Length: 242
Ligand code: URA
Image 1 (cartoon, rainbow, N blue to C red):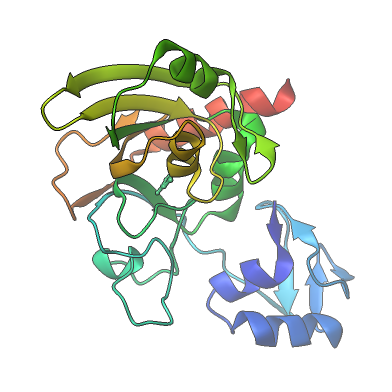
Image 2: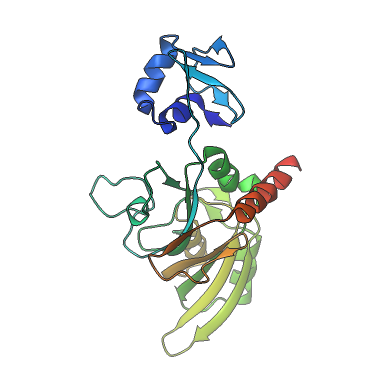
């Protein structure tokens, strides 16, 4: 399901703001009925008419990008910094699914499919996101357990996480830790480690569900194939039913 004004804007007939005006002025019909409510949710099977003309639905596209450091995971940036969308040659209005910090690298999906993006982002759908963090110091068993069971991030307890120490380095007093979470709160991984008094020095997302970065150097991207997209849909939707 997607918001009506967004579907109209994505079809290329007009901007989202103009689409909102058209809806409020009674110029938009869904399945033959005038719809005056902004934000009405429509499905891909719904027939949408704007000023009496049926809109063509935009083809959906899906990309997996290996985000470099110093790139913003957004559609635009008010400070003029490079965004993940700038890295992909695509005329359609794509956007990132979820966020990665400016200094975080790794796997990020971009699409113009709002339903897909919402399904993947919703924590109840439990899509694994696997990060590798270089942290200051070493986790003791209690800290490890606390991270696994959930810590308070912005006053809300995080859900269960899988946490594994890959490597420790006594000389530099750092560790490499793998952490798999389902949520996507702002700066979640950094805040989780901060909650147990370890600073994250470097962060990379290595995997989203079954999608890893095999074959993608920093800054490179590829299209997801049909099977990958339908499997991701199925993974998220199965969880949604429970
Ligand atoms: N958690 C963070 O702290 N940063 C990210 O970029 C992603 C997850």
